[in-house]
View (cartoon, rainbow, N blue to C red):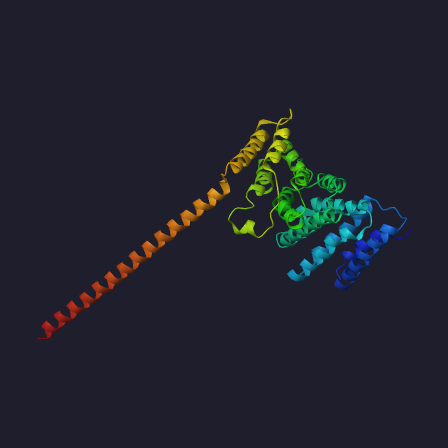
Length: 330
């Protein structure tokens, strides 16, 4: 029995020889393009085997520029397929692979895989932009993500991967769709995280979603470098509040989760009234920095004065010794 095409690609992509790996990456891109017009049916198992190879291909990638280029190439494969069906299978297999292998990534390789995840999520949103943000396509991508990284279930994906996604989710959406994503479309992207707020038992994950997804919206126009570098997503605070309250009213939501949801609703209410806790924190930090600067300047001035005083004392002492020495000589 001959080896399957996907198994052959997986072997070559995971090869120890760079030339074989690079050839395989070019070939697989062309194979993806042919796949869309082929009558051959490809299932999830096929994509999982290919992603096993792509994972180890990227594992072997050294040097930052090479890693960034290859991460871009691998992410861009999302657009190689004529049908949304295969694009979704490719996305699904990527996040399934990352969820399975994340714990195996050592600290020396973690940063490059986090970069790959960011670029891949960016291309997921770019795919939806290319599809004119059709609701059917948005739901398709989000349903795939809800199986792993957007799931409230602890076993669906490692905590580190989930929080990395929640950390970059709104940033990447803003980069791609800031000029096209309306408040109505934005609600679709918030829905999976509303479900997380209702169902997750992990307090750290809940706080990550609160801060990096929902409060991201009201902190976009805050005077802070981290936010100024990203385009601003348009949103309706009333609409977001209603969405959150609708989920909070579900009978199976426990008190801890409800408390987090209500705290977000209150932050949005404060935002509507012109109060921004994040900006207050920044002002407080700025004020503290000024106080610290003054304290440092005051301490420095005192130190200089003490040094000058000490120098004066030493000079007086030397002069006294010299005078005493002259008296003794006489």
